[in-house]
Length: 264
Ligand SMILES: [Zn+2]
Image (cartoon, rainbow, N blue to C red):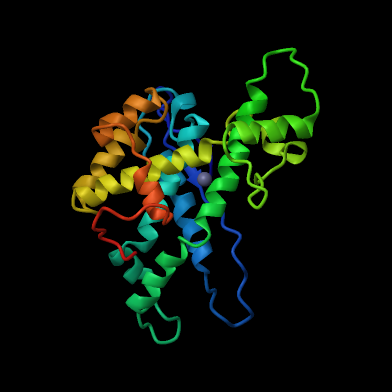
């Protein structure tokens, strides 16, 4: 997702937003079939698109997705949830020859598969995010010393020094945090994901995918751009601070406490 024109009341500019998907081209004469990974990506990018399109702010620099990096992936990751919403899923997930819907058991299997290997995935991510923090918390002018030693001691300090689960990126090739703009911000995807699952939980607690709920999300989150600090913005929508539990439950790392509307 990117935007050609950011929304702005000041300039009376309507947003012009686009999604580009480089999906696999079908064989000649065959329909294009989209993998579930690509379906998820499409919902993700469309979540960013909605954030840009539904913006109602004065200044273009604060519009739509011009929000802090640890918030910008929240609407997109949140939107991924609708891919498996039963009524949405039934609308697009059909057999390409017979038109038959995907059997419920297969849908449930997709959901269960999302929990596979999540202990490893979360730990390697956290190790990389904490390593990023450790390097960027060094005071200005501090001698870095031996890079491998620094890395090992940082991982020990944060209790993520597991030989079988190394950090996703080691210091010497962790491009994101040196020249890639993520300096002390690699945690941002995961923090956005906490918000995404917690917000979806709000929907589950309030009757699921209804026009009224969607309108509230549009008014309190998607239309607001960066016109507020993100913490109070989110708290106002949720009615309380975000909880990490929905993320842990979604990833299968904590027993589920909530009766879900979508197949799990
Ligand atoms: Zn994204």
